Length: 373
Image (cartoon, rainbow, N blue to C red):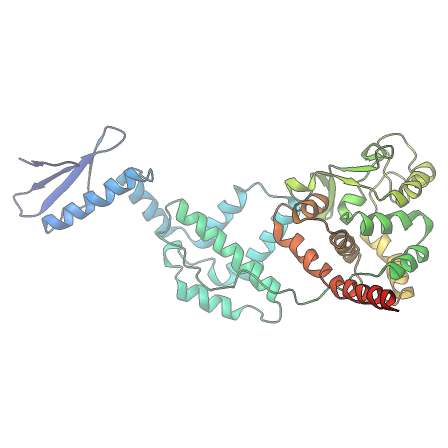
């Protein structure tokens, strides 16, 4: 007869081996997948099962065996495809992940069974990635780590084999130099008149390009001086897709600096015709979204006029973020204005603004000298 225990039962069989079983949370009697040579082995199995129940991580031993068997036969490529299909992602993010998988992960690892993706194999794969493209390496490694982390949660593998310290992050290789106010003025005046407010809103309000080209008359509140950012445009797979902003925090209200309100008002009166749904910055037909290439053709000439051939359009948003940080805005205020959901990006702009401290110190010295004279 099996001996009564606090949890489970252990019985010695005529063969001399030991059988372990227990009643699970589903009130069904479950047996170990095999008998044990010693009683202590049977007790250890029961203890492990009891721990899973206590941690609310329990599934039936039979289901667990099925998962292990599936993982042994399922390849990383098959699992990654299911993983991608089951994620709710922005179109551009989905395309980015697809590209990383097809170009950088699956060619080397796609046919490997999930259970055979080891730390050593991951390290060998990572070392073969193009070292001249650190951001791409970090993105590819981060995606693989995330997929395998989900495989752990799903019970497909026991642990995540991605353990390379710092491989999922990278230092910014290009240090962005914000535009000065003089450079911004030169760029603005060098642009065609209908695009000048785009430069001003991108820099002074730190709006993204995709947010700018989807702005409509109904999104501008000139009485309160606020832009309601609720949508954005992305181009992927040859399609123009209007959706919510990049992150949940991207849906925000951005205060317009008072000196820009007359400019925005005049632009709406002259160029945004067609009611509340009229685009502020449409393509030539007045209805379609402005293509980046159309804007860049004139922007490149304008930045040359300002002596800033290195300045990208997105750097205007960076400039606006630094200007906001220079006002003494808190981290939370910067995050709200820029539409950031995490503080890391906003911290970059605060750090960039710290360079003003030297200018402030020089100004204080001039005051002190003037006072002493």
